[in-house]
Amino acid sequence: MFCNISEIKEYSVKLDSVFSELSFLRAEYPKFYSWYYEKVLSGLSDGTRKIFLARSPLSFGKVNGVLILKNTTEEKKICTLYVDKDSRLLGFGTKLMDLAMNEFNGEKPLITVADSHIDSFRPLLDKYDFTENDALDDYYVNGRVEYTFNGHLYLPESKTYVA
Image (cartoon, rainbow, N blue to C red):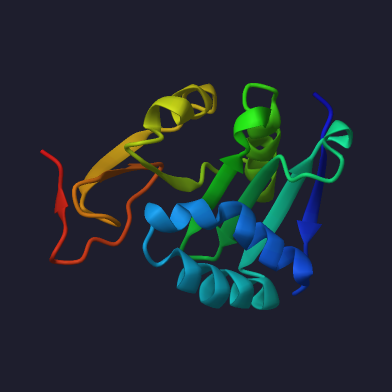
């Protein structure tokens, strides 16, 4: 399916609508609100973060997908890759992943995936030959596992790897 991908380059009302689109993530990432409004938005200003929106001309302005990237000398990371449920299996994830790979000049970025989403992400991760590195128990939410690919997350003393 054809889609338009646009980058949000500065603070605007669109940023609040992106947060609204992703607000369901607060259940999986308790600090999502502060991360988005403090780290992501400040990263837009200093150029270390980018936000892209995918839309189909047939969706009448609806956001079909969101990609949030972090690109610093220390870390190249896909922070958020989201495709609306009605838009899955239509190529939006592939288009956004292609864009991420281009943004990182072909270097495979770090990405983490919650255990509740790992099955839906597997085909995309396999397609791009991402390598699973860690399974982190209770990293963001107690009782949940966060899988890392193409790198490692900082591991505080209170967190453990899943055996």
